[in-house]
Image (cartoon, one colour):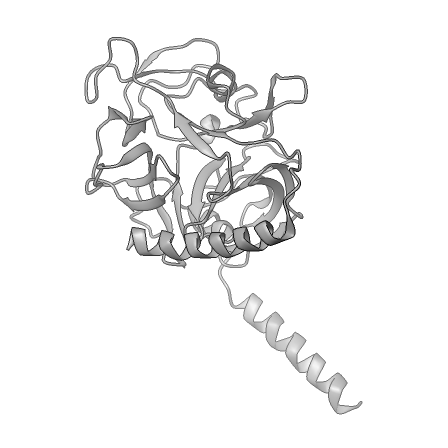
Length: 319
């Protein structure tokens, strides 16, 4: 046996021993498809997760926050509602939200209290911060985690209860961080069922906050998708390229929708209850079509340099 083959065998044995020493939650294999652009700055992919409960399927949207045409909206304050009052929003499915707002991509976000109809809209109060187009919908709450967005797509994530809302145009509070500063932060005290494999919704940001990742993991469906634990969700978000990530409302509420070719909402994932739930809060993205616009080479070169400066200033802005 030559020295090269011996080295390969030793490396393979070392990798196998390292894998066998990992806990079931750590011994997770993620396979991600190639990203396919569907709008300017928006690309979709699928992920297959081999986790502690078996195989799970996830749907992923990567949003380039510096791309032209990208903007956001979220569920607005209910008619007659007030932040912190007995009514804050009126529930609707994520498909209904996408259709009503004219957005191109939508995902469920903030946990809510009146659960869990798949047939009827209901008045809702939310269990986390919600801001819609500059209007406070639900107040910030401690023990949660917040996604904050300015009108010009500066994105950040902060612990709930301490969000500074000056200049924030849209915001959504989730259960908790699963990833912070590139590290999985899920512990036994994380305020959701961290060890149970379930459908999950998550939002992540890349290290320079230029890319947002929207993720819907299906679960509770034998033979198709089992669901993931929170530790596995954090690992998935890291593997996708997130530096910080928040678990949003999940379970039967998990839904990811895009504009279909015929103008009707196209539900990408398979809700565990067999139908979309009427959720208390959703986040939507507007995006420009992929129709190419000819650009002179000199202008294209200038634009690429400008985008680099924007990415640097993004980090400086967010501190």
